Image (tube, rainbow, N blue to C red; front, side):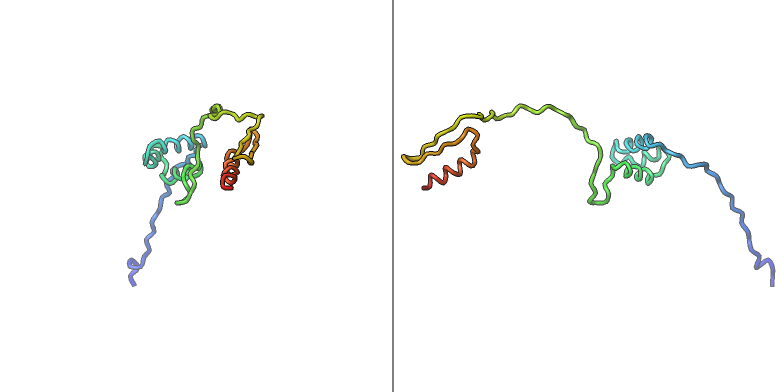
Length: 131
């Protein structure tokens, strides 16, 4: 047997140290996430600009609740809002006192208070008119 034929080759592998992973503060992550949402399709370009992977940026977006979960996911986030005073009522206020007498024919009379429900009164009058 030839020893050269069956000799094993040993390769030496070198370990390349790239340093520690970068730690991002929450405010930095939020700034990057918001920047990625400024224009459509800005995820990849924003990730390259900050030297992070696209998948990491997508994870951050999900953690800040800006991406829907699946096809039926709910979109959540902040929306602009304004607090305004209540507008003045458009219909005049109903008088609180007084009454109305409605005479139907010679022998029928309906007396209602000023705060009567108009829909209910209309139903009663319709029934009385049929008799």
